[in-house]
Length: 233
Ligand SMILES: *Cc1c(COP(=O)(O)O)cnc(C)c1O
Image 1 (cartoon, rainbow, N blue to C red):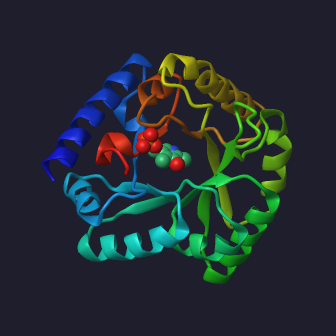
Image 2 (cartoon, rainbow, N blue to C red):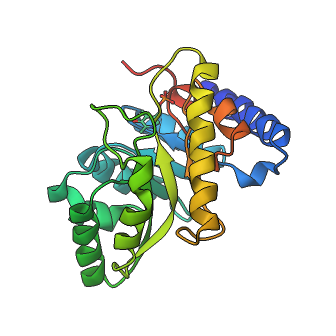
């Protein structure tokens, strides 16, 4: 899987350069390789190249992949982030499979995750999904409702509130997305300043088409599928 190797090398270079432009060190930005529809061989090729963070949108698909990848990658530490819309009836399985749930967008879901984690006797990190473009068709908390929502999440002792995640309105021109990334950074800064979020806050934003702009605006996690594994069919 020569291509995955090449892709990762070039992406890591671009991440490094963008981090540098934003006055940060490259290790302040984590690459989450998004595996939706990616075949196992390609995921394993990424593991061979040292990639250890992966993101999945579907619990069912993830269950199979995570088991197969951890078997094949014996001995290596690999973490999975859930990045899709999480249905309440999949909360239990998600709590078992993932290290971070990036898309917590409602109280009911948080309550279910917390309940299942209590049974499992462990905690996980969560990000609050923010609907930064206020799009009707997208999930996420409205920016002005984040303070209250995060306040309510505090009651769930098995959830560590690690930061925010967003998927801004799509545009083919990454510069059109920059204002949304900037709004996310300002929102995160404000929440940290007011003590709503912890000092070291994660900002998951930026995909294959716009991750460099996202990093320039403060992303600490970028979620890349196509750029790593090629176009999805
Ligand atoms: C598919 C997906 C990505 C990756 O998209 P690419 O454009 O292929 O990089 C990132 N985040 C979420 C939430 C996704 O669903």
